[in-house]
Length: 87
Length: 550
Image (cartoon, rainbow over all chains, first blue to last red; front, side):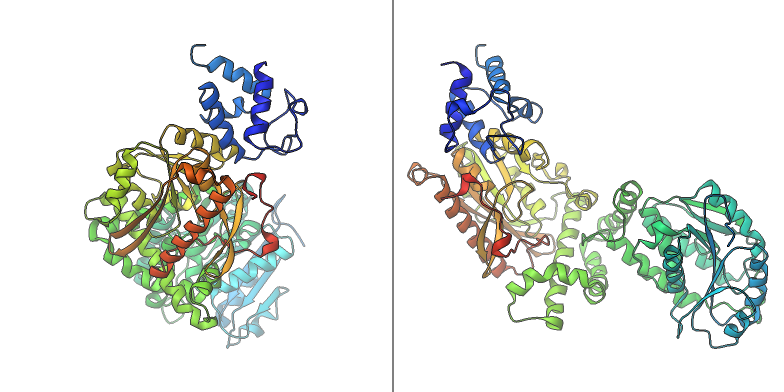
């Protein structure tokens, strides 16, 4: 499974999203906020930070990069690829 | 009606109080300029009203003497309703020459946003009391606003109507004329001066109603209030939005005076200053009592109306003492601060395990000082907190002198700073989050507090659960001069609890926190300072986010 699909599955599972399948999540659409089809709220960011760290060993949370990393599935995959240990 | 200047519409305002002998001369001089004139008769009991009949002027009459300040305030609103841009005030006792009005008009054209003061040229023949009075009020203006004024008592002025009529004033008599200058500076308006001539009469002929002792005392009193006003963060009413730069300057200057007193004399004289000031606010500013009432009504059920004044006084007085103690900590450092913290060792042991730790802090006592005592843990604290302007100028955000390293994460940042907080916890940091006030987007859950539903943020519990961190309810009270009591109630996050699921754990943790807060305000009823209103009607409670439904 490619990283983006993996992330989508992870988000659906960890955030207990109901009535959403991986195919519904757009690669470029925003994850958070009123523009987002997923409609994640700021509290969901806690799970996302924790699971990305646990699964990929990547820290997201720095005030200058978190908004970039959490912009979309594409951006998140990109950020993880670049910041993975050993990459 | 002829306009005084190209773009500005100017109204001449003459407050009159028993100036029968001089007012005709003044009005005749003014009439020569062809500007609209408003006379505010402040309850004259002599022949002044009859003297006015000879002139085509607009008139307002107070049935009794209410003070020059109120007369000018009334003129400001009268002028605003009729679309005037400026008023020029001059005294009816003849000391100001209408021939100087064109100078003020020129200045209005040059600086339409400014308050323009006719600076009097004092030669000999000026009464000593007046000279002293001028210096006295110049000094006060400097303390309160940071601006030096060559002549702050001159009543010969031009005021821009719109910005000034929107401010709130305390002064009704001569003290208004100094107060309006400070408030203008606070609101970001410049002050300008033009030279004017002045004529003082021998005492027998002089009809001034300025009483040197009484009115200078009133001026000092209003200044004490104004300086202290900057210390106490009631809802800000006076400054229009976007008027911060000089406003915060006034703030800083006022606080500087207070800090000086504390540094030189200690906290007790500063408490003394609070007594009349808090009394004043509780008695005469209903908004202050209203701000405290939702809590006090629940904490002291069955009290209402006048019987609420005493708890309101004690509440604000205790709050003022807390602010003073905090200022003292900033000035004097930790020296002389007494700390009673029976749970200190338990918290240290927990901290040494190196797991993430969520500190739930509340608006109780001197919580900033309390947080700063955590330096003994030798770990930085990540604080999710919005720096308010008043707390900044109070020096409340200054944790540097107090030892602990506090890293503030603003709730106004990306996703409320939640990613940053979460990351800090996964790295085993200490994160402090307000438990009694949610910020913006973060979900609020209703819980019964002091017998009524209130909204509390769910964030601290959600953070603790999802990052597998322990949780500490951290409460504090001021128990004496520079003496604080601290309490740390610990909740260990265990695997067994985590199996119950996030929603259930979050709910239980919130209930536990609210119980701890309730117990705290029962022990220390005047130590909770959340004036933002957390009580809600059920229908006001926002729909819970998916993450907190059970």
